[in-house]
Structure formats: structure tokens, C-alpha cells
Length: 305
Length: 245
Image 1 (cartoon, rainbow over the protein chains, first blue to last red):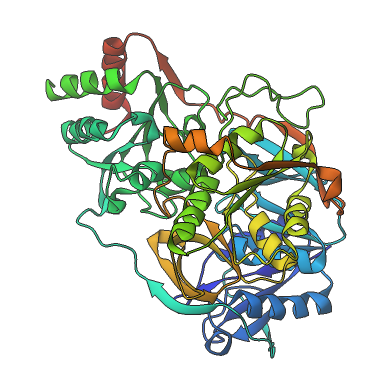
Image 2 (image 1 turned 120 degrees about the vertical axis):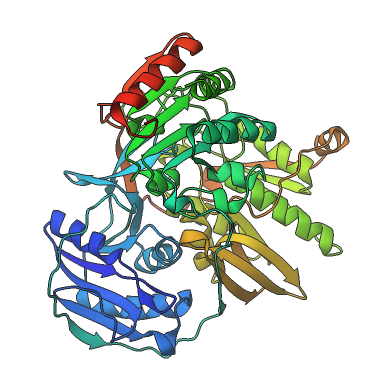
């Protein structure tokens, strides 16, 4: 079996996710080659062939052009699997490749079971084992699902590639993440609010509990999108990655994007009415309770200590 | 849909009875953005398309009440067996030759989450597509957009219509349909055609099995009276962590 691994480059740097792609290739016992629109002075630590297109020429984000560059590599290598990260770059480019190849694309793979690829369903509440029916299969891998292998001193063989195609989309650079007063990545204790808090007024109760514990409060994406908390309070893939001693998740079901942001917490308490919520997988303690009743009582008892 | 899933007898999907159905959340942002664009551009006409069994007409009526002009329903009682490429092919088959200026989709569905269909539709129609949008504006046929990247960073893009946009949560504030608009929506056209009329592609993948994820275990589940729960939790925090020291 043969794979092409699609590495990523952003804001002047090769991204680390390629190690997980290599781990996946090793797991399925496949030979691999890597594709990167990047910089020859910042190559991934990878033992093998890297097909490299010069990012200064082809741009960090240019789907039409990156598609053409990758298709030419695929035509030469004839891989069984084309492997992307399930990231903003990967889920944008992968379907373009899948259609050009008339191939199945299996998105957000978390495991391999025999001839099937396992993917989440309904926010991780269920799993689905999917079988590809096409010769070549395009996959995107959930971030963190496959643990990157150690690659000490790798010396890739670089094959430079190019194309004449131009794209219809103009990339005008990046807008930096909002900078706020709170840096949750340094907090030792975080109490976070999810959609389960029900209404914006309930944020005060979450902030009170955080105060009683001597910590900061955070929020999940839906709470931030609803305008109940500032974006700089958001924990998760598109917000902050945190690693506190204690993380209390209130009314957070546990979307994978949220879990990715807080799974390094040392001790996790979840307060939820739903015993089956995916947050339960990560929680050391799951308190099954209505948080509108439980949180104020807990806060009061903590203050009395 | 809510959390009370049961796996079906074949073991390949979940039972559909006793579930609450609603519009895919990502699609709410897509509908809202399309309605806002229709309000901005004089003479715009907005069609909402949905594939699925009879019950999806309720979701389509919500979209009509939000401001879409007409509905096109592709009737399919076995939509769960169609893969992303087939779903995209149905939409592209309907859209081809109609010269839509803009197509909006959710960036993914809440259940299957493939994040493929919008991009596939655009590729099939040879339109440019931009994905995961959290910012959108349209001026004289040029779209200026922000797409969400990891870590709160955004990518800034421009592209000329016709184009397809896939919408991320937070792109806008989806409106609640008002009662007069719900009444008006009842009179709007909602055409239904059988899937056979539009589906010409074979599936590239199939579901072998659907199952519940294994519980990793180790976690302690506390239930009971809230005051008692608070005492028990404080005891655990004292024993297992240093945060109350």
C-alpha cells in the first residue's frame, strides 16, 4: 500500500501535524511520500521523499493551484491513500482532490478497524465505521487521534515541483487572533461554561464559582458565538489551549474541538444533566446535576471553607 | 437531533423514531447569509434546497419563513445511504444551467460532519469555493471573506461571483422567523421531486457499522441531592488535587 501525506505550512512555518500523518501511514503499514507547499529551509522531520512546491511562488493558501500541484504528484505516485489533517487547510483541499480522482473521501478518521475507517458521528456521540468503494481513497485525520512518532534526525529527499495553473481565489493574508486581557493558557484553575448554562445571565454564576476556586472562567464556542462571553475566553481548537490543574466544565457536552483545547488539564470535573455527554470520556468526575442548582451551592460551600 | 440514539437492527445507522429534528446549525448561518444578501441586492431570488424524507419540509418552511423565496425538496427516504459525493451530485445536477450567482452551504452537517458537500458541489459546477467563513461581504460581484483557521487566526480572501461559500458557526446572527413571515411562508412554492430524477452517481463509500464509542472508564459518576453532591465533590478535590490547599 502507498500513501501521499499532505503536510501544511502557515504564517511562515511548517506545521507540526505532519507527524500524525506519518503515524497513520505506519499504522496501516503503508509506504509514503509527502507533499508540501512550503520552504526548503524549513522541511518537516520526515524520512522519505518530499514533493515540495515553493510557497513564495505558489502561496500559503491557493486551493486551485495546490490542487493542481498535488494532482500531478498523485498521477506520478499512484497512491492508495491520500492523507490530510482534518484542519482548515485539509478539509478545504481534500474534497477538491477527491472529486478530481472520483474517489471516496472519509473525513475526520479517528481509528482503523480492519478494512474500515472509523469516524465520529453527531459530535462524537456515535461512531461510524466506513468502507471505501473506490480504488484511491482520500482521508482526513482528526487532530490528536494518531500520536506522532519520534523522528530524531530525518533527512528527506526533496523533489521540487511546479505548475502553470493560476487560481480564482485571492489570499490577502491573515488577521491575528484577538488579544484579550485573559491568558487562560497560564490559568491553574478554569471553570468553563457551555451551552447548557441556558442563558447569558448564568455566566455570572460561572464567574462566581471560578472566583470561589481562585481561578478564571472560560467558555465553549457556542457560548462565545452567542455573545455571552468574549472570544478571549474561548477554550478549544479555535480559541485557547489550556492546561490547568483543575478544569470544571459546566453544561459542556464536549465537542471534539473543545476537548482538544482542554485535554491537558490535570483534573477534570464535568457538570452535566446528560450522563452520556462526550465530556464524560475525559472527566475524572462527572456530576450529574442541573447546574443552575448545583453551581450556586458548590460556590457557597467553597466560600465557607 | 438529541442524544437518545438507538442503533438500528442492521447495525449501520441509528433509529430515526423518537428524535427531535431541526435545521442543521451550520445551515442556519448559510440561510441567514443568503437572506441578508438577498436584502442587499435588488431583484435577488433565493431558493432553498434540501434532500431527505418528508420531515425535512419543516426545516425548509423555516428557511422560507427566514426569507427564502422558494423551496426545492429532493425526496429521499434513504438519504443516510447517500455518500457526500452523491449528495453533492444531486445538488449540482439541480443547479447546473440555472446560473446561480451565489450558493451558500453549511461548512458541515452536525451529524455526519464530512465538510465535503459544499466544496464538491462547487468543483462539479466549476465554481470557486471558499470554506469555513466567519466573515462575508459582497460588493459589485466581489466577495470579501474571512475564513476561520486554527487558534483564532483568520484568513482574508477575495473572489468574484459566481462562487460557493461554506458557512461556519458565528458568521452572523440567524434570525428567528416572525409570525407574519411564518404565515407568508406557507404560501411560498415548495416543489418536491423524487431523488431518482437527479441522482446519477454511485456511492464511493458505505457505512459498515454504527456504534457507541467505548467509555474510557475511570471517571467517577456522582448522582443525587445537589448539596450532598457539592460536599462529595469538595472532598474529592481535597484528596485528588492541590487546588483547595
